[in-house]
Image 1 (tube, rainbow, N blue to C red):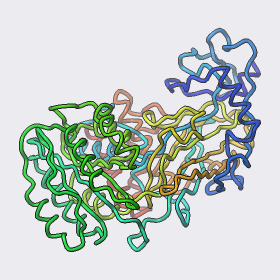
Image 2 (spheres, rainbow, N blue to C red):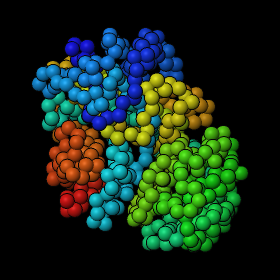
Image 3 (tube, rainbow, N blue to C red):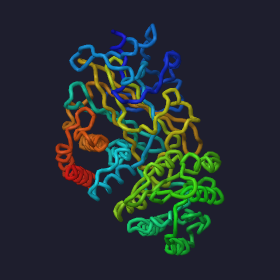
Amino acid sequence: METNRTRPSRLPGERSHHRTRRLCTTLLALTAAGGLLLTGCGAGGGGSNSSDSDASNRTGFPAPAVPSGGEQNNGQSSDADQDGEQTSTPADKIAPSPDYLSTFALDVDTASYGYARRVLADGERPDPSTIRPEEFVNSFRQDYDRPDGNGFTVTVDGARTDSSNWSLVRVGLATRTADDTDERPPAALTFVIDVSGSMAETGRLDLAKKSLDEMIDRLRDDDSVALVTFSDKAETVLPMTRLDGHRGQVHDAIDELETQSSTNLGAGVETGYATAGEGLRKGATNRVVLISDGLANTGDTNADSILDRIADERRDHGITLFGVGVGSDYGDALMEKLADKGDGHTAYVSNDTDARKVFVDQLPQNIDLTARDAKAQVAFDPETVAQFRLIGYEDRKVADDDFRDDTVDGGEIGPGHTVTALYAVRTRPGADGHLATASVRWLDPNTRAPHEDSGQLETDALHDSLSSASPRFQVTAVAAYFADTLRSPEDDEGTLPGNPGLGQLAARAHTLAKKTEDTDVRQLAEAIDEARRID
């Protein structure tokens, strides 16, 4: 039984990484070689980090020993419960083999949260399948330190919840501040615009046109723009055009956009990438910006096959995809998958305020890149951690041993971005000492040279309660609990430890909105109020 006490296990329902005894042995060998995990320079809470492109100089704490005799307890995984008593849990509810690593590709999507707000404002509860907690969490400003150049800072902190021995641990990654005065490479943007019949609804094509006009005015003279439209077929309305002396021509092309018939999104993406490839600019950020309600009903509607047809442009030329969703009816699944597979991210806009935020205020981070194929790996110490669960990121998981395989796809991140991963962690009764090491690996956007940073968290750095944590940490927790509740409509309190339910979440959100004086937090409080009214 003692061997079980030294292996953290996933929460019930968490998907296994399918570790095997052979892989555990491999992990032991890699760790012994000093290369599997990173350790930060400083101990304690947020902000301790280090950077080095040569991971061979780093060491990590050793992996747990592989048990003799294979699977534990004939398919039962045993662990200590909150009071230190031994409990038995079916093997299909907990990872069947030792695993204290969590690895995922970075993601800065926010569309799930934006669309949920829209649905709630319309008096309906969002479909649980559209709720991605990481996109709720990543929709809010954070308090992380930022690096001076490309790359990331790593912040690791946490707070204990009201549930015995459970804590929320926040892993925060931040890129340099986005500043319009910064030198950045020129941008070559191909806008792929849905002009199908469904885009005639107010708040779709009209909002897209207004947003594009504002964005064009904010771009620089050395930036380039192309326009592609699609309905039942796709058409290049404007080839790649330098803005210097041609802004009027671009505005005229936008003004002439009108809705037509059905939605052949596959043709639009394929033509968009072909246009971007023809207008490719070396040394520039080449990006396709897809604006659509995602309601494809003609031609190819499968994200994988759509992107397979434009693989050369994506892989050879490094053209990335930024998806912007619109409309009360929205094809969330298709747009999200296209962005993930297209090395990009998604946002959702429902009104002028949202559009200005995405196309104007966040312009640098949505067109520039500071990191390619970025991945994170968090190692929980088996001496102090009994269970853990990554909240969200189900579609972004990466095999643990692929963390340092730079051929495995990660996330593309721009300046001004923060990426937050929140974990529910159950510590062992009386646990004291090292709790977790978080590492991030990315490729330089220009040279593709690999780099890494890491940070650590000790148990004594955990805040005693969520209310004693920083306001931004509290906002993160409220957003995660809100998403958890929306994913579990039959249970007002969700499934995460410490979830207080919609009533207390609304009260906390309103208090935090006043404390932070943040419009985004106020909108979160209003969204929770809407959910309570619907219930």
